[in-house]
Image (cartoon, protein in one colour):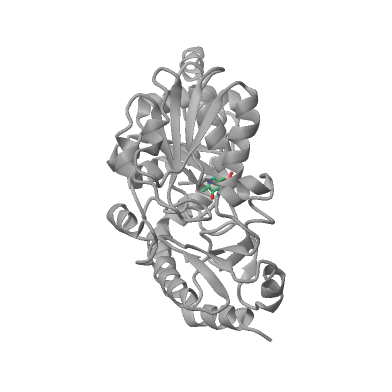
Length: 363
Ligand SMILES: *Cc1c(COP(=O)(O)O)cnc(C)c1O
């Protein structure tokens, strides 16, 4: 697929121009309405998800904002899981609340909690994230898919479409920040939402007003990323379980979060709904102030946000990704000083362990 680096297409007749201006997602009109390179990327994601279709956006947050404002109005109600991406929480508690759309927060790992919070006739959307970034809690996808009156959406970014397929569990919409594993090289900002075409058409009608449209160049880079997503994810998952297992018995570590570990509280559920456990491993350092020293002593691992790329990255959630939330809110999500999110890359597992073990050890 070439990069269609154009904002406009020429019509050879007034009739064709009229037709393009009045169709949903046209590929030959204006790039905010549709672009062949962007559509090829979205179609590839829909294919892997087993979804009828998909829509691409300029970022994961652009996708989220487009879905929420396409489906909700003042007075609408949303149910969301507390274990969620920090910026998603900031968005729902900030601008979304300001528009008179109320969110009820529930523990997504507690059986029945999501369904119990639905207010018949008012709840428009149930939003869950699994595995959650960065605490890696698991939501039961069958339970989410069984909720019928409101629309259900899962943020499946951490799993990638090769790690789990929420559509097969009856969930209406699957959202990804393709910035992460899907594009996979830390050089793209992109979002994508998969689901039934009729629902996506409604989201598209709002999306072109919101304007978070994906760049064709980014879509092409993400298509390149998808070619190797399967093997990258396999390698990263293999390395992640190895590193998580070694970390679990390290004296400087209080707790390790990884759904692939048998001691993870929802390991059985994760094993039932995921084919791989993904590239993100989080851990709580014994020393809450130890992150600065850790970064100073690392050589191979790099201090940066984001995940799903070739390089192994670490960041302290308290001071970076979740610093926009009140301290109490952060602690309620299980995020404390010294809570580190690690994105496992493609390096040799022993090189990674040597670097990490050396940086964590005393003296
Ligand atoms: C990064 C991320 C987002 C936001 O995506 P952007 O592409 O950065 O806008 C949403 N959800 C999860 C789980 C993420 O990791």
